[in-house]
Image (cartoon, rainbow, N blue to C red; front, side, top):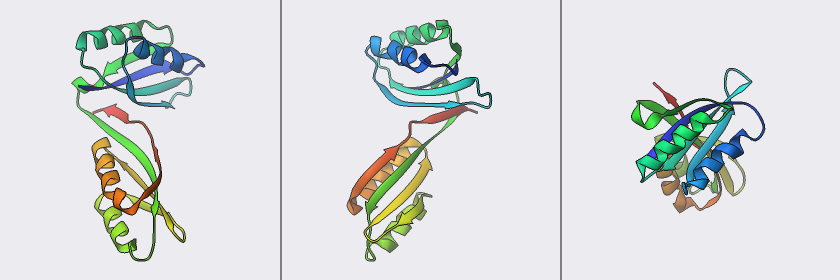
Amino acid sequence: MKHTISVLVENKPGVLARIAGLFSARGFNIDSLAVGETEDPTVSRMTIVVDARDERILEQIIKQLRKLIDTISVVDLTKREFIHRELALIKVNFNKENKPRLISLAHKYKAELLETEENLAILEICAESEKVREFLGELKVFGIKELMRTGRVAMAK
């Protein structure tokens, strides 16, 4: 089961490495990791997504995260109602023939066509991870040349 964990930490060097180390030491791969400053510049929020088949080990990691000196709070959002988004920038093949289809697809997914050049277009989508994945699947027919995705960011309701 995928878990979305929100961790508030002091905004200091080395904190990210220590937290990522806890997960890797237990054999958990981090599926997604987004870190950014909060409304308080001395505090950062980490949104970590992990696929945890063993709930007991995940609970141990969360307990250990709470014990780290630089950790302010740890919340497993999976057990609450929350909103999440992911951002993707996608560069695809572009020409006059596929322009209407590309614009229609962008409109369908509420994506934005940011740039067009002679033979390339750059699109942006900000949506739930599943919608981003669906959009990318539909863009494959255009030929994805480059892709940049952020990790999931999430907030409890």
